[in-house]
Length: 324
Ligand SMILES: [Zn+2]
Image 1: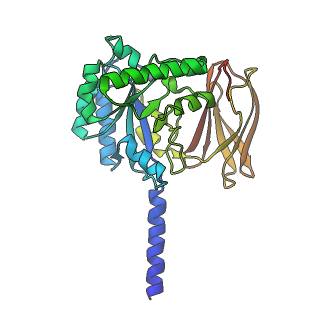
Image 2: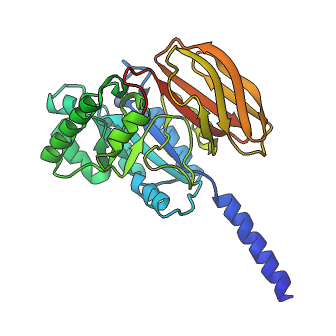
């Protein structure tokens, strides 16, 4: 009887565990209620709709650092966690702030220090940032918002040092998180940014955050216009080892994609910027695709997707400094 009870409760625990073993999602916004820029704008009406959706579906909006703490301690990441981030520090964030306050939703605002320091009218001032600080976290998004792949190691360091200096001078502390401008990075860029000691580094690759995710390589889903939040929250993290390509191909032709995933999968979908989705077989846990795709853009996303919306993204950036 006792054994039966024990078995039943452990089964329940197991099921509960499986249920909870979802992935968290980090969303990224840019501008609010600013129809001049449709590709980066979210209307307040849309934002309210999304916030209401999160509330009604019992998602917990948690600070980025709640997630980082869980990752550091290898804790289970509840699939109800959502982290809200905003890039660039546009003035229009002031229009959205009352909604964040109304829903008691924390946020991380990634700012570039140059436009703030130079008082560009479209950007938040230091005074604005002081007023915003009690309600969320303010973090770094470079100084001059450069394409980091186009900069030498020294230039990346100079931009970051300048940003840290201004941030510290005006806000009085060192930012703990960094988001790559344009979401663009490679291993060289990552290594340099990481060397500054940030606790978290965010990209802009579609994906979700699992227990095994790298706190220095956090995927974020861009929310623009009438984004499909329901779909975004269905994404799960796919464990993947990228064997090829390791970086943007020198001759500009993507010859093959080779990714190790679980042998449980027999098929996977592959997306390459400019070429759309295509289905490929997975053999012994490896999705290998011979392609010969000429790449026309200097920034290319390669995405692997398997059933249950499990996804893993790699960004390739053309850089004359190459990957290390
Ligand atoms: Zn940006």
